[in-house]
Structure formats: structure tokens, C-alpha cells
Image 1 (spheres, one colour):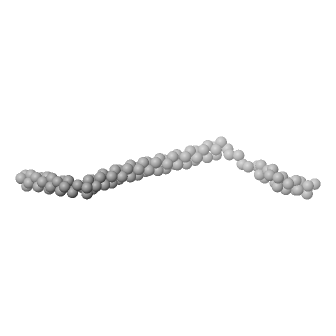
Image 2 (spheres, helix red, strand yellow):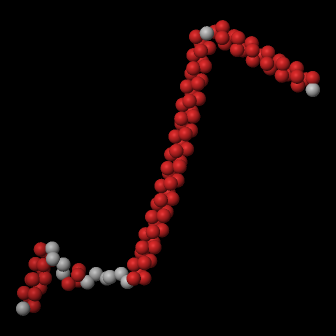
Image 3 (spheres, one colour):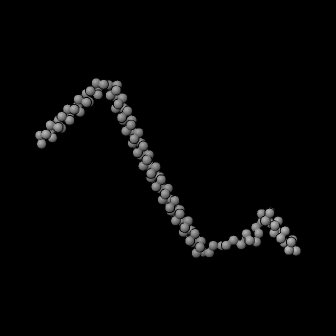
Length: 110
């Protein structure tokens, strides 16, 4: 009879039915369950905070990238304008030099 019971237990394990040792899993008590839920909540909060930091960092990076793109486009358009119109470049340099001279004279008069 003992051999038959052992064989039946072996068959149950092979067939996927839980054995007596497997069916006696510990059940969490209410305080243990509350502690586990609190820990899970804390982990969720930490994950949310980390996710928010990543999102903010991505948005800041994207804003810097867009500003860089705009600056580069402006530089390209200014360089293109001066390259295509050397006379405009000469006029701009002359105007800036006269402004600098006027500012220098005003500073010297003070």
C-alpha cells in the first residue's frame, strides 16, 4: 500500500498535479501583505520619479537641439547672403566699424 501511495504521488507530480508539499504554500498575513503593498507602492513612486526625470531631461535636450538647429540655420543664411553678395558684406563691415568708432569716441569723451 505504501508503494502504491508513493507511485500515486509520483504520478501526480508527473501529471502536473500539486503534491502535498507544493499545496502548503505560506499565506501572507494581513500585516505582511500591507508591508509588501507599501514596499510595492514605494517602488512604484521611485519608478515614477525616475521616469519624470528622464522625460524632463529629454524635453530639455530636445529644446537645446531645436535652438541649435535654429542657430545653425541662421548662420547658414547669413553666410549664404554674404557669400552671394560680397558688396553687402563690405557695407556691413563698414557700418559695424563706424559704430565701433563712435562708441569708442563716446567712451573716450566720458
